[in-house]
Image (cartoon, rainbow over all chains, first blue to last red; front, side, top):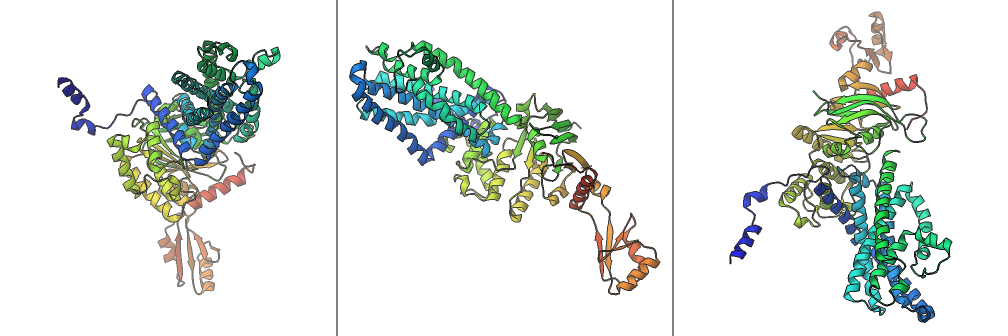
Length: 289
Length: 320
């Protein structure tokens, strides 16, 4: 009874208090920047929800890859590799989709600039890093439903996923997505225009399908290719997800390239680097015309 | 009084440009003032307003807004100004209310919530008040796409005022609007100025909008070529004259010659006042007149005269 009373007191707000207008947060305060990050991220997510064509197209591509490629390769190499090739393609495509979706989504900052909407965001009194991080978070929110779609499709194809593995996929998927966003931001800082971005993107993303080991195992690469592979940011996101998926399983060493702490460390360090360089370059390009 | 906008030797040269888009301009704007920046296309108006609103970096010069340096304290400047861009800057995918909510969250007025219903009561009250002013109570939750051009502009102005900016920048806000929307927007702005004492910094092509200004500044090839109250700018360069006509034009011509009143036939008889009162001049003429018109210059006359004069002085390629 007394506990209930206490709870009731906590949740009832005196009448006068509700009429007091919330005081604006001081510029530069953490609360203000978090608020702005949430608002910017949510705007991107809303735009995605209202764009049916975009929702449909983002689901088709990974489904084709897992269904045809994974199924076909399992039939061809599955028996000799010592692990399930469908699992291999599944984790690879999941990480790759989330990573690339956020990376390319960041380019909409350029689109916003052309539609003159970004001006409204860029003249607001918040840190430029908050704007960029809000944007990355928004694109991550857009990427995650696609991840859910791929996982459901994986179930349908007969991939066995335990609840622990599901959590592992969720966490590493989120990280892959945020990481892709930071990478996209750095590309954006280097790109002068949307046209340049569209022309250069295939050269940045397509090779990583192979150098990051999305479809092809990377064990025993020749030195030169091994160096190139280590330069692919996507490699670490894919390998981290496979680490989480195969954790404690007998095939772990056969599938996973590097220890999970190593992948995480490389991702964290380069995330900060990409964010910093990308934001500085982008803001400079905007202001120093 | 401390100026609310202080610009000292501002220079902007774009990358790979041969000339300065803004070439060493200085001016002050007092709090509450209505300041209008005029100039032909490419004169440097948008460049100036972009620098003052922190979206473009200056090449040289010192600029303070509400006492804050625009380069070193850009976020302090940003919280104190509202901006209406030349291009509409509403998000077309969002509803009117969502656009306002995004703005309120970016300026830290209210904590962000994903839906309208979760927002604080004070916010809802404010949005409802705004919708009332706009007359869009029913449409406030509809996508911006369905709004007319004039309505969008008004929404942008209302949105830019919700964080109570000390200075409101408007970059050609009425371009592309029909006369009715323009008038209604203008009445609204006048009311806002009267009520909130907001300083207004405007660039425009519509010279009649400049008539009401406290100060006008004419920018040409990146330089300020005239500045002052509309009356002062007009008085400096533009003549006052009388236009008269008579049924018997020969008699009138003859009379003016005899009385040594200089005139030009345009085909009306144009007589320079040269400071004389029109009354005195008319009394001196005996021929029955059919037309009497006193020409008082408009800002437009002054503007055209000033621009023409400077084009004659300095023929050069268009800057920007």
